[in-house]
Length: 222
Image 1: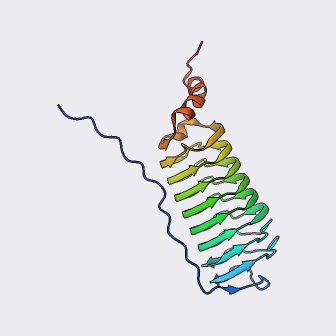
Image 2: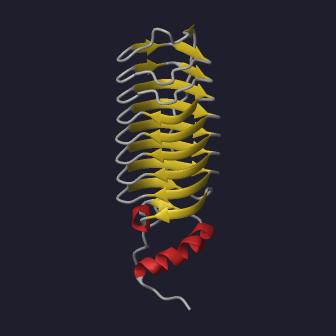
Image 3: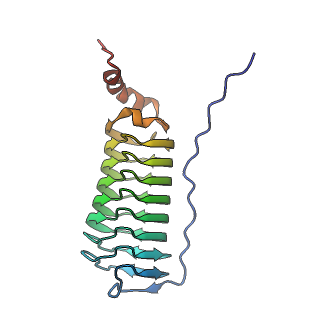
């Protein structure tokens, strides 16, 4: 008798180590639209309201930087580390992120729709709303974060882990998920349950989702 196929093994995010050496301190005065900045450190710099459309940051460090309403459309971030970022509005649609770590930051509305994220970690931060509609995420770890709303509708996601997070609403309408681990995080609501195909949840989360699943399937529970 043939053996039943084994359960496929879920793969977690593969994150590259980021090493930054010999950085040059930059007060940010001369950074502008379409610039190419490499191996620089920005500490306690106020970039609020500036236009950095198409600007590229490579091997850069950011600490205590204010990015409120900074225009970051189409910007590129490679091998960057950021701590204590501040922005009520973080606007970076159609941007590209590769080998980036963001820690202990406070961001309000985060606009990352149509963006590409690869080998990205977000840790220990508070965010009101993350718009990742139609984005492409590969090897992303979001850990120890409080997020009011996470919108992944239409996104293509491969190897994403939400680790020890508290999330208000998760929207996965039309999302394409592969190796997505939600097991250690708490959710108040999930929109478009069919979009969870390809995600891993635990028994407690399944119990919370049961009424929503029953309603979607038209099952009456008495």
